[in-house]
Image 1 (cartoon, one colour):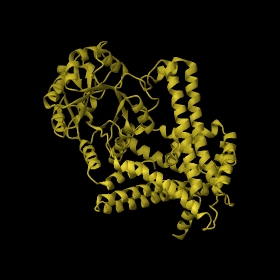
Image 2 (tube, rainbow, N blue to C red):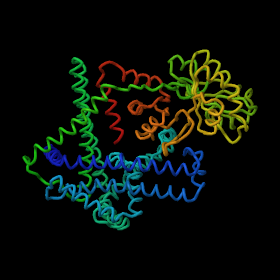
Image 3 (cartoon, rainbow, N blue to C red):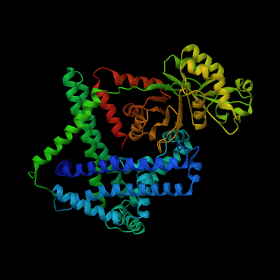
Image 4 (tube, rainbow, N blue to C red):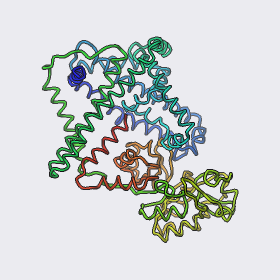
Amino acid sequence: MNRLKLEFQKLYYNLDKILFLFFSLFIAIEYIWVPINSWISEHLLALTGYLYLSPNNIVSVFTRHWWVTAAFILLFVFNIMISYLQIGFLFSGVHQLLAQRPKTLSQFIKATWQEFLTVVWHISLGKAFFLLLYASILLPFLKRVLNVYYLNKLLVPQFIWDYLSNQYLLGGLILTLTGIFFLLASRLMYALPKIYFDHWSVRQAVKFSWQQTKKKTLISLFRLFFLIIQAVSIFLLFAFSAYFIQLLADDLPDSLSFIFAILNFVVMTFAYYISIAFFLVKFVSLLTDSHLPNYNKRLRRRFQLGILLFFAAIFAFNGFVYLSYPFQNLPLTISHRGVNNENGVQNTLQSLEKTSRLKPDFIEIDIQETADKQFVMMHDSNLFNLTGVDGTSHDFTLKQLKQMMVSENGHAAKMTSFDAYLARANQLGQKLLIEIKTSSRDSKNMTARFLKKYAKQIKNHKHHIHSLDYRVINDVKKYDKSLVAYFILPYNTIFPRTKANGYTMEYSSLDQNFMLKLLSNHKKVYAWTVNEEAAISRMLLMGVNGIITDNLTGLKKEIKNSQSDKNYASLLLSYLQGIFNLF
């Protein structure tokens, strides 16, 4: 305990230097590089003649002009190098903190800058891609906790993880690979200081680290694991202490509970930065076998306190805004495929009847064309999973499809036509978010026929349309600009410039930069498919316009809690969950 106390005292002495590292890096990345990178990527996309980048057109985009493709590749490589330098800057700063001769802030800045310039001078593609491999695959905790901009964008969307986790064999394989990757991370971690500080080649550094951990595999594994657990535990200890204090404070008069809420918000924010600093210092200490030097406790105490109060004031202002105006723009509640917590079979009348009683703002559904050019309610491209029949909607007429039974989660019902579903939704006053699914077997004028038949009803009953195929969105807007149409994007890459009213975006890749661009371009966003409490809280904090979920009751409960009077503890818990996701 005394040892841990001493470590925190040393961190406190270096508080000005640690905050300088985080603050300067934040400014450089968020306010300089991110806007530049976005501007370049958007202009390169414009040169291809396309308005967006998605799985449907990615091949066409990158084969349109060879020189644009080459520019995209160079931009990708440059972003990987920026990520390498981002971690290099933090490592350089911590390396200077570990020097046995204490430095003033100005001396620290000068020494860090000089060391960082040597990192820049010795950068290579091999080193940058080794860091990409290490921080993105072997030890993704590193890119998350250090908030490495571009590496954090390289992720597998949550809907793919959800699918894989439901496949027991694949889930077991992923779990095994995660263990293997973490083991490799512990064996290769000693390569990092050799690459950054001693400027060795990747091959030399990897060989050194492998030999260093030979016959010490379990020790290296335990050290890395214990360090991560320590950092996370420090955050949780302070954050949950603040949360439980707020639970008690909420029983006080409103003015007092609000003051406590702001103070606890500040504590949680400091807990986050302290835990990151602790991890970073201890990680580099472990790799370099060095420690923070001892300091005179009386030295520059007033200056340290001044720095602490300055940032506390900034955090307090953020807390005041967050706690005073929580979730002013509440999202629309949207039931995914018309179900709630597996209460029926997706896209059926029975589920519509049950789910509409919960009064969601919208029910999201899926339609496909049939062999006789009608429309049926179906999500999957193949009917087998729900019906046991191997084939697509184009292999059968609507009459044949309506005779098939669809079943899942212990429920069964007959397949539903879009006509019947739409008519019943109109009777119930239930608005729909209609996904028009397309395939290579669709009739040439499929969207035009759909709009001719249904556009008037859709407009009168205020239903919305969305689709993964931008040709559908374009056709909808050509037919009637007043129809509301959202373009589905499974991944947040380059900001799209389309005619759509907004975007249905896979939630795990959404970030604040995308939200700001939506605001400036007068677009909206629906996040899908958001089921977990922590993910719902994150989307509420981000300010999305709608949330598509399989857990409608959970979503409505979270929204209700966020709006309950004087429930500051709930707001702080949402804030805590948002921060914890960064770990």
